[in-house]
Length: 175
Image (cartoon, rainbow, N blue to C red):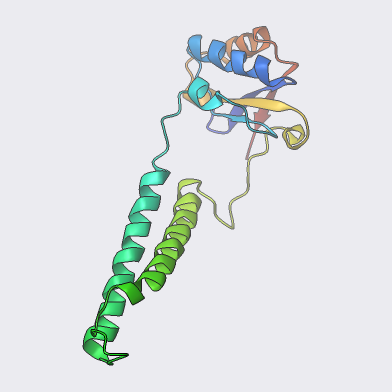
């Protein structure tokens, strides 16, 4: 029985072979933990079965929050708290609010997206990353398969990965 920290790692040298391997491995009923690459691979998201990201909706929500806060803040300051008649204009005229509203919309959208990314990616300053193969930062592509998430044995999964054209098939465990 596999623990939560045991993986089969397939090392590939070509992105086209890796893309075909991902499809073949998933068709064999093996759940892939993650694919690591030193460069983006077109079509890998679809091959892994990832759903479309909801980050654009989060960006819109943060931007709308920034816009609302900017307009409320300016209206309260200029129209209620400290009314000043400047050039005979209304206390709370919308056109002068546009630059500040735009800036706060962009600021809150950007800061919100950074926070969302950090939370979604589970990035913590004290978390030690799992490095499956150091060569993924240079020229190799890696498929990591968590043995605890699959019903097949270590040997069966290793054979499936090897048949897909992997240059190496390794076992990796983390403490």
